[in-house]
Image (cartoon, rainbow, N blue to C red; front, top):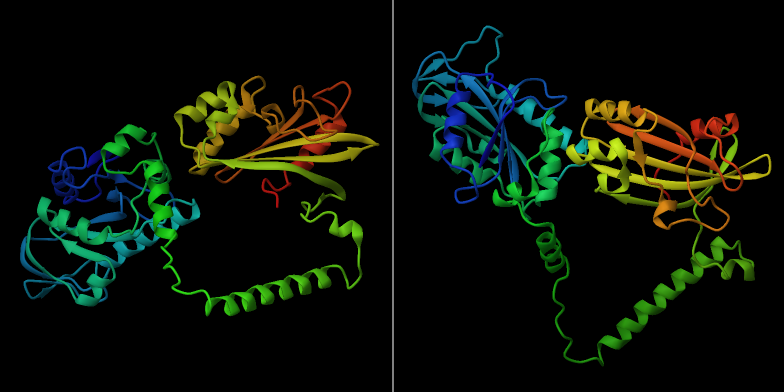
Length: 415
């Protein structure tokens, strides 16, 4: 377990949480994982004592300071807490401190989902102190993935092993994204560190996934009984295909339609102007397709995804090429930081698909000296480049500048 301290713990018992985690040591000999201490993920309603990212789950640890040590704590999620038989009273009138912990866990899970992080189970640990000898929880509360405990090394370890139950271990790449999504500052640990903490190699993930998704098929002892069923299924499929083809052609035989079996991407219209798709791609390695200061920034910061797309349109009878790059960052703060760099003249940018050999007939040879527009919306940064397909280029051309503004509304994904 590697500890990353991002701030002070919001509760006194948080120090006990940190001490318990530190006894496990670095590496995966005990458990593995990354513990973010004193962290407040974006959109979370409160500071958290810890968020523990494990290879098979995420634990949200919320500290609750009791007024005195207790021999026995009754801790229902939706009922009155009692310390040695006496009701726990709070100035805000709340009966159960667990409600705040569940709210924080829900916010963390929503954050991971919204940022398209690895869908690991998100569970809750309510750490109580200064000392509790015994905690009583209802079975239904335990089944909801909530543990109330005094954070000793053994109790916290047992809870982590019970709650982190994903079927497939998280890869080092996905773990880095989770840390970037949950931590508002700093950079995630290196890939080597994450692998040392028990997160799997991506190549291993692919191998295990293919084994799980492709079950073995038992050999059929005889074919005499199977063939009629196979023939019936094939005949049914052919009938459906014929029906779809008939409906799509309007009931008429069109030789030109049958000559083009694959459908073409749909033309996109922005402000009455037609934009024809000319290819797109998607990658998680944003820095590999950037240059200049933009590449330098991306090399040191987490980027969730890069989508690139190309379009063609016509202005006054002349063909125009459009290149779009859309970067998904962990949060709006980092998107704004990159926006400042990408908006600076000569600071670099994102390599167009054309430069990587993915041009199209009649399209531009490059996007050098293009009209450029950069915009940011939330955690997404978009860069558009526009050039004439042929002839001299002028980055200040007002016609190209208008297309660049319109291109900010084009989709970065094509079908």
